[in-house]
Length: 191
Image 1 (cartoon, rainbow, N blue to C red):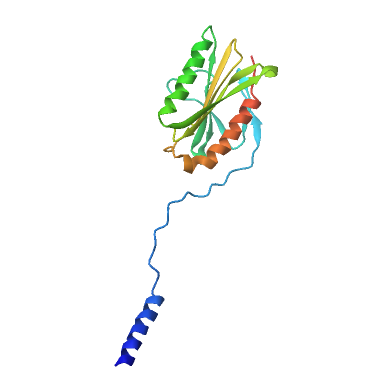
Image 2: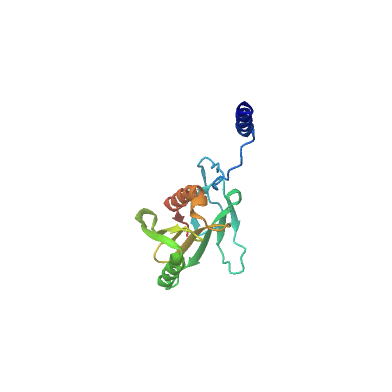
């Protein structure tokens, strides 16, 4: 009898070890994102400004109801992202435009982990401004404004058409941050 009991126990162990493994839930992860090679092209058109932008982006005229002349979007449809560019002619109201830009940035302070400001000064091109790097789960992680301090003002902001999640968009955000820095470094006033 003891022999049969040992065979039964051994059979149960063999049967249990041969059974399919019980599925174990895996932690959520993010899909791998393939980013293109960095290449840039010059903005063409009748704008009071020019800059180099990524060839994997497309320039679209801003069609929102509040859009004004020379407002454009650099769209990256594959990444559900765009850089919104708005332009204003300065008429003794530069301080107001700068204040409005700061207000738009600091609206994110409720959800932001940190907001870093980097001053932009390119005397040779008469380009001045501030680059805002907003950390955290915010709607627009990178914003900037540029001016010649007398007649022109331009504001830019990177937006994703997805719910903000700093971990999932981090690779793409860093990729586009570099493109925005390139845009700023090649920026020139035309008129």
